[in-house]
Image (cartoon, rainbow over all chains, first blue to last red; front, top):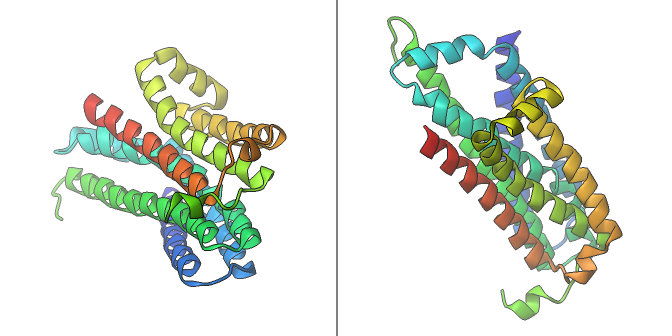
Length: 153
Length: 111
């Protein structure tokens, strides 16, 4: 069960991040904002909240053993610093992703380049935080692997 | 983009409220993390709320986001602040920067 939660967490976070990049590009290139952009914004919001629930659930039910391994291994700071930053900084991205459908809808109503740039900026913030989370997650995975007996990279 | 171009439009009341709520809660995600790391009773209060401090903090942020969005809508904050798309974008960016920088700082210094 634990492995499926990590998989769900990583995949929904990764797909949400890629969609945020795509939405930013569409908003910056197009002359008007329509229903597809709104659907994309709602999809990103949904994916990020699924990522949060899966991540919290896994952290509370499946992370104890990997945490003990990391702390006893050669990179204990992978939990104390990297994982702590990851689990808390994600909340910033989660809050900004919650704004996306509203700012995209407002960009659609106002119909100006400035309004589309506002929505694109929110997408870029979400994408940058999402990409950072993927990188930090990969780092935590590496620390777990290096902490295992007879570790190989 | 000049300031003049930035200020030609103002966000409607509800979207303006949501943007302010998003920026404030993004900043609070960081500031509450610093607070709970430095003040043990705050961490304990979050944990008591939802079984784990991280889950409690997420719940508090979600409730604050909703309450702030409705409050800012009722108080017509977007109209009073003349919240243009540019200002709204900058507000979201500033809130996110405060949140992320405070989180990175507290764990790098503590770690």
